[in-house]
Image 1: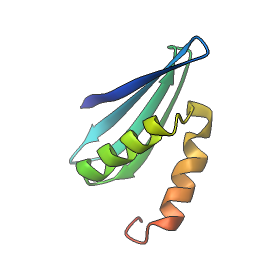
Image 2: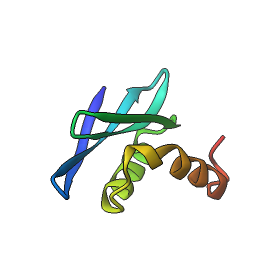
Image 3: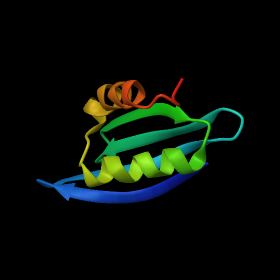
Length: 82
């Protein structure tokens, strides 16, 4: 499954934010930058949690190159995250 949660245009670049995955493997976030750069991170077994995080990342205009660091910080701050 791949669900687009939105796009941001910044300095001529397009960032696209997606929730990816399924119930068996869990859900993750994908960020693409104008079809040149892409990053995926598994974030939760809960679709709603992954969707909420993807929306937060879009609002914060997170780039693919920063996704791993942001998810690592998110995991430290969230006690429910394993």
